[in-house]
Image (cartoon, rainbow, N blue to C red; front, top):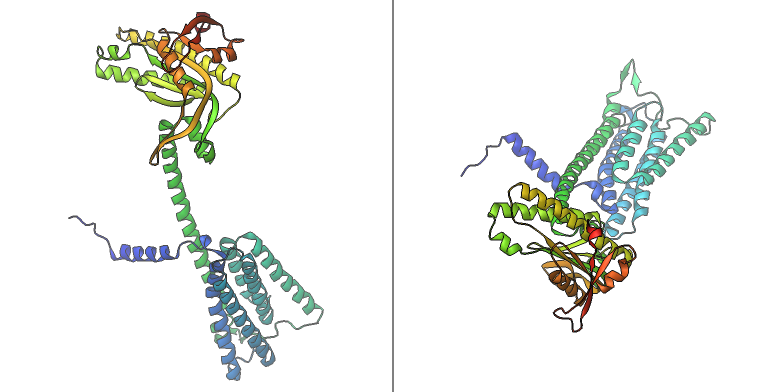
Length: 455
C-alpha cells in the first residue's frame, strides 16, 4: 500500500493543527468561557507583578528608583486584582451553562480596564510604553473575542481614568507615578531590574496580544474558507434541488418557509395535464438516441414556458406533464386560470416550432400535444413516505384535468366548465358539449380554446 511521505515539519504542523482544532475558535465560545480565557491570559501577569513587588520589598536596595510607600500600595492593588480575577473565574464556572451572562463579560472588561489603568497610573502613563501596550493589545483582542459594546465601555473607563488622574496630577492633588521614587535609569543606562521586572512587561503583553489576535484571525480565516466551501456546495445542492423539485417549492425551502410546503391543505387550484399524442407508437419508429434528444428538448421547452407563467411543475411522466397554479404561492382563482390557459396556448405554439425544427432534421413523424385544464378544490402538500416525499396535488378535480387531456384532440386545449367560467371574458373558447369521463358520475361540459387564440 502506498503511503505518502511526510516530513517532520509537516508532522509537527499537523500536531499543532490538531491541538488548535481541539480549542476551536474563541469567537464561537460562550461568554463565560471567553471570560475564563481572559483570566488565563491576565492572571499570570498579575502574579508576575506581585512576585516582583514582594521581591523588591524584601530587597530594598536592588531598586532605589522604587518608592517604598508606593510599592506597598501597589502590592495591595495587585492582591485586590488577584481576588477580583479569581472571582471572575468562579462566576464563569457557575454561569457556564446559562445564557444570561452578558453582565459577566462587561465586568471582565471593566476589571481589565480599571485594574490596568490604576497600575498604569502607579508607574506613570507618560514615561513608559506600558499603557499603550495594555490598551492596544487588550482592545484589539477584546474586539475580536467579546465584540464592540463591552470594549467601548471598557475603553471609556480606561480613558476616563487616564484623563482624571492626569488632571489631578496637574492640579497637584495626587503625585505622578507614585510607585517611582525616581527615573529607572542612571548614567545613561536603564536599570536591568526594571527591564526584568515592571518595565519589560509591555513587550511581553504586546507579544501575547499579538499571538492571541493572530490565532483568532487564523481561525477566522479558516472558518471563512470553510463557509466559502459550504456556500459553493450549497449552490450546487440548490441547483440539483431545482432540477428535481418545482422552482416555487425550491424557492420556499431556500427562503425558510417550510410550512408553506411541508403540510397538507385544501386549495382551489387550476391543474394542467399534457402529453404527446401517440408517443409510444412514434417511439417504436425512431432511434433511441434521437428519441432521447427530442424528449429532452420537448420537456426543456415546456419547462421554460411553465416557468415563464409561474406554474408549479408537479412531475414528468414519460412525455406527460402535470402543472398546477395556486400553490405553494397563490394570487386569485381567475389569475391562476388565465395563466394556465395562456401557458397552454404558448406551449402549443412552442410545440409547432419544435415540430418544424425536428422535421428539418429528418424526423418525419409529427408530434402533437393534447392539453386538459380544470379548476377546483384539491389537496396539496407533501405526500409519500418518510424518506421520500413529493409536493403534489391529489383529488377528484386533478383526475378530471387528466381525463380532459385524454379526451382532447391533438394540437388542442380542452377546458372544464369551471376553468372556462374564469377565463371566458379574455380567452375565446368554443363549447364542445358534454363528455363522460371515468370516475365522474355525471356528464362534464367542456370547452376548446379557439384556434384564433392558438394562432
